[in-house]
Image (cartoon, rainbow, N blue to C red; front, top):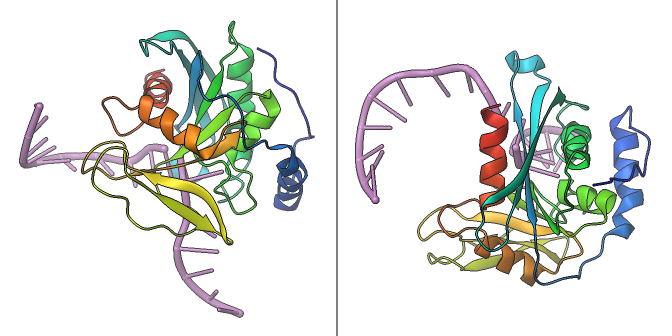
Length: 222
DNA sequence: GCGACAG
DNA sequence: ATCTTGTCGC
């Protein structure tokens, strides 16, 4: 598939933040409620501890019905930015974009490892990938980031809102009974209800969505 | 002002 | 993210 380059690569944190602020208005908070091919994206790092910058990016495209892998791409690269909370996307974006460009199919939804709207400037990795591709995108975080929330109930499907700056920016969602929740948010062209329903549909067995699990294993074992 | 802070 | 053993459980 084709991915658009909407900005030059930032050299400083200030430039990176300016890019996020400029692209933020392009995010659309509604869109399709069901999807065909679903792509999971993940990056695995491997290097010398502190100065680590070698990485492997993986994309796994799953069939919507069977959740079986329809296509997969692995790309080796380097971290394109230092790790700064809030600017995390700039580390992985080039490798992930290259992986997406090597797909022979176009996914209908991107399931990203990280946050979307639930971000200091409302423009996390899921928003960024969504805007660059024009595709619906959502973010799944494994630990809390911005905002506050109450613990969701113990059953699968239980959730509580994540509030930040007086607005609901995501949900803490229980995908497995009695297991730590995941933190979901909108990336692009999806409602929060659709994000919630889709993440539940993609977690029939484990805490994390199948597309992300497949991408994670791919990146790790490559 | 200080600490905390997706992966 | 990664550095790492054992341990509990399906």
